[in-house]
Length: 268
View 1 (cartoon, rainbow, N blue to C red):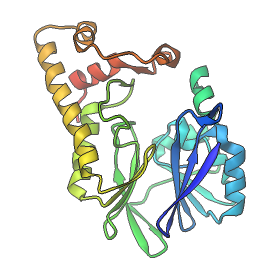
View 2: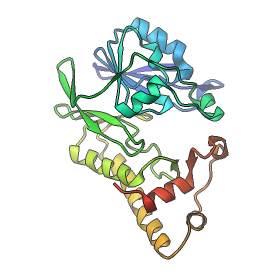
View 3: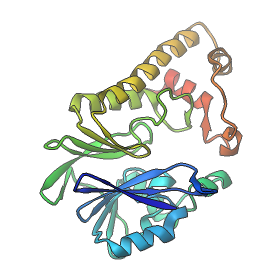
């Protein structure tokens, strides 16, 4: 399913999701600015994305990272548009990874886009605006954002966690690095954060700070418990974070223990 919203006069928010009844399981945002689209949406909305691409002039698609909800719609835009991705992400765009059944249901399967090209420049021009390509890795081992310092707009993808209190993570998320990236975003003094799942957030400072503080404080607590000799399962029992019903269906791609391990072991 797809919904289209406008942000001001310049940005089109392209929301895609898999339906559950008449509601979306979870929205993911792509954004069109001029003839450029940032991220491509999910594969389960591919037919709607093709119709959107046919009706709009899209010349370039920049995908931020290799998760299926952001690259699954790439095939809707080719061959009319060029697709660009970082070198790590490009591997998944060229040769998609197998998805567990649960994620096929939530987001859809991936289709290879062999004509996609590597994103190897430090800035891109969109109309009258120049966007710096910034490193936002942490949520994923490679993730890029697009920053316009004149308007103070940041297309941030998943750099800022969706929940205010992040209580689980993917197996390859680096939580200390995620905290640092959010601190770097705060230093930018962003006016509008174009988030990958919440949509545009105006004056996002407090929104981001809430997430920094929770994860930073959690990190202190977890590392103190580890220093006392507590194991990850023991720390998990102490934290008493509730496990979502769907967690077993992720086949260990998500876990509370992943979050704890990252806070103990990962470096920025």
